[in-house]
Amino acid sequence: MRIAISTDGEYVSAHFGRCPSFTIVDIESGKVVKKDVVANPGHQPGAIPQFLHERGVSCIIAGGMGMRASGFFREAGIEAIVGVGGKVSEVIDKLAQGKLEGGESLCRPGAGKGYGLDKTECDHPHEDTH
Image (cartoon, rainbow, N blue to C red; front, side, top):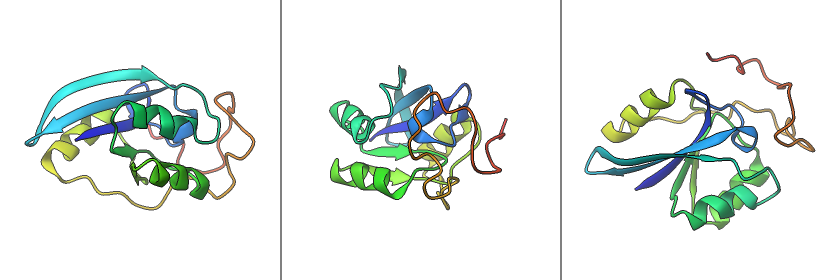
């Protein structure tokens, strides 16, 4: 299974669309067999789901995303798990063990509307997770 994690430094990014990069991991039989970090291609509607789909990703993990983005991922055949925070390395360990649980999106509806990678302020209190 190939999974993408919205990444900001060592941590899961609260906003998948504005993260600087994605950590892409291949997990087979409970073991990480490959791990790469790729730059975010930009936050245009539908661009990131297409970008990740072309790389064989079947699941995206992020702190949050809006309903429209969730729909784009669904159309691309990519499962979206939101409400995840913490260190990327810990998330990868939980994934390998089959113990990762998602939750409620950390973003308010419309919080990222009209903004791209240059948005510097977040509209929710969970941004500072590190």
